[in-house]
Length: 378
Image (cartoon, rainbow, N blue to C red):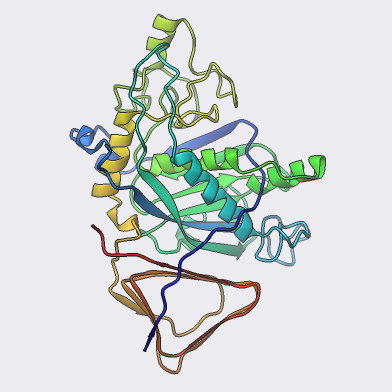
């Protein structure tokens, strides 16, 4: 028996940030996290709260090989436009690294002006659980929802999908759910990458895309917009769908009354008058204690299985490999007589306590093996 313990090290790459208006829609569900949480203040993190990690799978939706505009997104081999030095793996490595850098900090709320709302640590981060590439003309488009067809590790990892409205489109959209198997999806991230690459000949970073990921997964973690409806319109707290259940995020009407400024400036990107809360669209990332109470309540009570120290399956065996796959179990085994070859720029992801190889495992150059080994919870 040979036990192998490996750790994932993300590479430093550069990609395109989100620099235009972004809109999103929330799918609510029947769980408690879609309403008021009576005891969520008890979950507000403090200095003794350990950082919670959340598994995420990323999915690139591509055209089929026969489509005249294929591939239409990042691929295993390149950036979708022939640059083999920057693949979909590189874009995701940089994205999750940038998102975790942003999650590691917080900033003072803009509104109400002169407020002393405590600025506390978020105490949660993302863990890469898998990257997948799907050639599917139908689900390539944002108008169609791929989660029922392409979810990996549902209920144990947030599944994030990158689609498109049309080839080269620049407008961004997002969607996320607040119950059940958490997922979120985005339109036109590659379209913007491609547009800016052609115009500027350089990459400009994943800072904005990381903010979009923080925003949409915020919905997964039971957060609402603070001054908008679920479909992105400015509203007041007494309108349907405009209550985020957090008293430390001032309502739009309160800010207008007290500060004589509208914190909802038509969702304009990077507008300094907008609310700087992560659950709005200005591109900033402030978050309040009560919002973090909802986040940590949700992690503990409805999404505990999404933590890399949690396993719903005690053991699983890898007996074959044909394309990108991710396995989550306390013990992952390659049995005797199983000969696993990771080739053709494919990737094998394993999240486990023990990775045991009785057979053989070969990873060819250019392919990816990521084994995240973690101790038991607590």
